Each structure stands twice: as structure tokens, then as C-alpha cells.
Image (cartoon, rainbow, N blue to C red):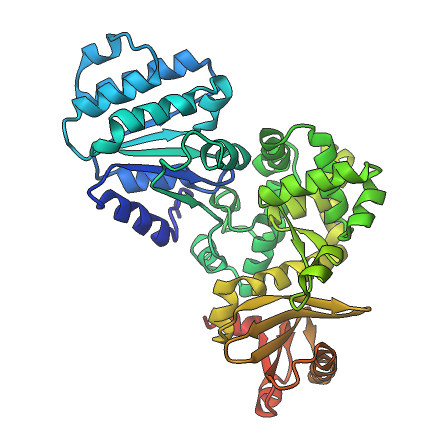
Length: 463
């Protein structure tokens, strides 16, 4: 099987094709975290179209500009184009737009944040080119970047010179869970969920695992081994996105270790409250951490009752099993670390399984239940893993998630306790349903006949 895979980007391609066919000039902002597959997406989109693809780098701004000019000249079939003296990128873009002479050309500037870092006025210069010429042309200009913070602030932010000029934007997210089957066709549903728990839906990470090897061997060789791509990727990712990475490392390690409340994170890191608040806010914006409140909480309650978790599975795994064990891993003891971590990994997977089921595309596919809100619920020591509310039809589905094998009697006890906890929420005149999802449930057909909703990984295999 080829390790270079292009999987499940139909919505993204449809969006780009729609903008391409609009008949108008387009200025699109495409962004998303490193390794998410943005470049492959754009190249796949542009492969049958006249296009220029330019990858900016960390070299000086003028060197980048000369390289862009050279690429444009090559596209135009004009060797002399690269010798023209342009004052700056605005003049270059305007002249290129005129030279393509009404043809629909896609111009992709990848890793755009590198240009911003080297020369902040580049944003205003592109605005000028857009206002003067490009907006009246047939050009499709795509600015793409991996630095989520930079793209959201500098390219999409209200104060950005490009604000009001862009004609569309798309944040490229992880592949959906169901796509993992294409990477690992022979893995069981349990192993697929475990792979998801370690790598998430990041294409560049998924291709690092060998589908011919077991899940455990892949973790040991591809994550817990010094020199492996995934061994240091988390550090590289964070250092590219944030300043003062040491403080972010401390916070992420605390959250990965189960400190979910703000006060717990402050105590674990020893950092000032204001700094922890600031760093958590940045991590939320980057999509690495989320602050969750009880799904039924009022706005006032939401201010006080938040819990934090790492939403990026690779980072969650790395900060739980790689970062705290670096001394052992540096000494080549990856197998020993993994053997010692097995019990804790089951606990870790409980949270992963819960987050997976909360994803709309997974939840809806499994249950067919339409909802307007979904999330966890907790109050005074009582917790329900998932509560899905359909506020329009006044229906609610309560869900208990267990990453373990359950006997029929255990499953019945969990369902009855779920029903008890559900009464604490209220919603007295709503239609109520109760669902148990586990790794394996013995006697699930018997429970279903009694009116309970019961699923296990065997049902995942059938989907």
C-alpha cells in the first residue's frame, strides 16, 4: 500500500472547485495545523488547472520574492519575466495578473506566515494589489499557512489589511475517524480507535504507522523510539506556534495528566494565574485545548464550572507518555515504558473514546439522533459522559461510555445508574433515551430487547 495517501477531502475539494467556477476573482485563506494535509489538498485541486504553486520559506523576504517571480515566469513561459525589476510584491502580482490575460489561473502562496514574519507590510501590499488590479481579474489567489495563530490574526483578523477582501476561507481539520480504515484495512475496530487515540486524524502521522505491524509495535517503534518522526514532532509543532514553549509544555503536561480544573493546572505548574489563563486562551485558539462546561449550564454557571482537556490526540498522548518518560526513552527503553504504561493507557482511552463519540459525524452515524447541543454533564460529584439535546423536539439521549468489556449484569447496572443520574438534570417533560457504548458488551441483544440502546465495537465493524 502506498504510504502517500489522499483520503476523504471531498468537502474541501468541492469548496475550492465552487470558488474556481465562480467566474469572479477569488482571494481565499486556507489554513490549519502542521501535517494536516493542506499542501496535498491544494496540489490535488490545482493539478488539472493552470496554476503557480509557491512555497515560502524562512529565507529573507527578497529571496522569497525572487523565487515567486521565477515561478511566475516559468508558468508564463517567459524567461525574461524573472529579470524584471519590481519594487515589491504588489507590483509583481499586478503585472502577473495582466500577463495571464484573462485566463483563469490559480496562484497558491503556501506557508504565507513566513512572508509576514520577514516583512509585515506584505499584507498591505497584497491589499493594494487586490484593490488595484486582482479583484477585477480572473485570478484565484490562495494564501495558505500552518501557523494557525498567525493566519487567524494577520490574515483573517479584523485589523488585518486583508479583512473584507477575502472571498472565502477554510480551516482544514483532521480526517474523520471513519477514514482510518483506508490507512489500516486489516486492523480491528479496537485497534483503529487506539490508533486514533495516539495520532488523531492527522494524515502525515497516520502514514508513519505501518499497517503490516501491530498497534503496539507501531507505538514502540514510531512514537517511543528516539529519532522517530513522531518522537519529537510535538516539540517542533509547539515551538513553531508559541513563544515561551516551556510554560506551554508545563500546562499541557498538567492537563494530559488529568488536571482539568483551572486551579489544578495553576497548582501543578506553579505559574501565576494570569499567565495560566493567558496560555490556556492561546491553546484554545490553536485548537489544542478546549474548555468544556456542563451541557445544560447557564452562562453564569459556565463561567465557574469549566474543565480543560487536550483535543489533539497526538499531543495528549505525547504529553502523557513521551514527555514525562524522556530519560527512559533517550536510553532506548521504549518497550519497557510502553509495558509499564498499559494500565494507564486504558484509562487514557476512556477519555479518547468519549471524545470520539461526541464528534457529530460519529455520533449521528451511530445513533441517527438529531441534536442541537451535545456535551458532558456533571454536578456535585455526579457525571454523565454525554448528553445530546434536541431542543426543537424536546428529546434527550443520555450516554455512558466505557472503554472496557462488560458482562450483561454490569451493563444493566450502568444503564440503571445512568437513568438515575439523568433524573437529576430535570427535563421532566422531555422524551428520554439511554445509551451504553463499550468496548464489548456480553448479552447486548438481550438488553436491546428490553428497550435499552447498547453498542460495542462489534457494531463499529458493521458500519
